[in-house]
Length: 452
Ligand SMILES: [Zn+2]
Image (cartoon, protein in one colour):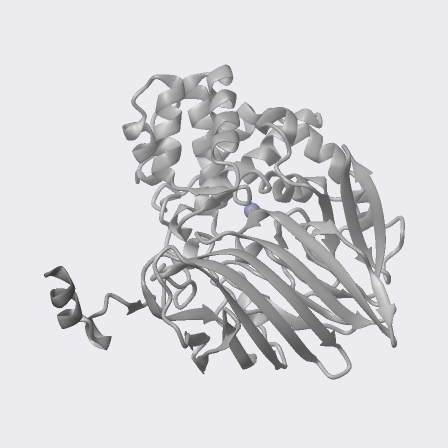
């Protein structure tokens, strides 16, 4: 009888339940991301006291097992988990080198939904191995700034810290009354009690964890509506209300509309942007629906619209259509940088074709745009060769087919992830042409391809 056989093989070591993988083994983000489950939603409640530089939080993570799970990991760096439950039952847990290792009291069945609740606290830390610089949680003069690529979220909440596992978020942040606490998505109710104010944010479109942000401090907020959706922009209270940051951010809606005309409908429920003053943030990042802009972009004292074009273009390319692995980073940066070319032409500057001819001459063909390597993931191989590849495709298939490819990509892949192979397959389908050798030559070839 089958039952007898089944009883015979039931044992702890051979019951089909295995630990989830501790690492997704993405060479661009070693140690980040975990396997064995797929997160749907994060409900975060964090409290940060800048005077003490102390964060306390409760994260409720709803996920589905993708195998029979006896144990699983979340990424959590620099903070201590003090209480972990799975489906309401206390779970064994320990922490080791950025991993929170959870052993639920009852094993989790493949395809079963489960909820992990983690209470945690500590003095949050910056990422020390960041290739971007200034990543992770930074304590600032008036509060804090948390952001970074390819990983940063694990410095302020337990997370499956890899873009291949997108999820929706509810984020509640409690800070001393008088300070702002800005994050992603649609603003919710703000309440104040006993000298503390709780700010609420909801991101209902799936978001990669590196696209989360938390900005706490003394900010001048502008809350408006654009195209029927909330638009929240903020600049440090210490910079002038009519300064380059505020003037730049005030055109966010207009820039989003320009890009929507090219790429298809804006993919999210809210708009915005946050300018920060901390010089450690030496970059801008396309944090979902609300990019963060470092002070360097406004050093000239003039507005800087192209950086907004770049970060807003990422809302389609990188955020709504996200990466499955970091080696495809050109899919993000190539298109966001190409959007700058299109804006420059629209704004009365050189045509995209003129920019292409110039950049083609300047391209270092010894460096591939596809799989450039961890050290080169934010290099010119991606930011300058990437848009050259995009324009070469446009020249090859013609304007009409090119923009049809882009709009089909952003609609078919909306809220999902994708790879370079997916993009090539789509471009071939829409154009009716074989493009494998085109992409090989332009993305990875070591000599300049003939001009199309
Ligand atoms: Zn970018």
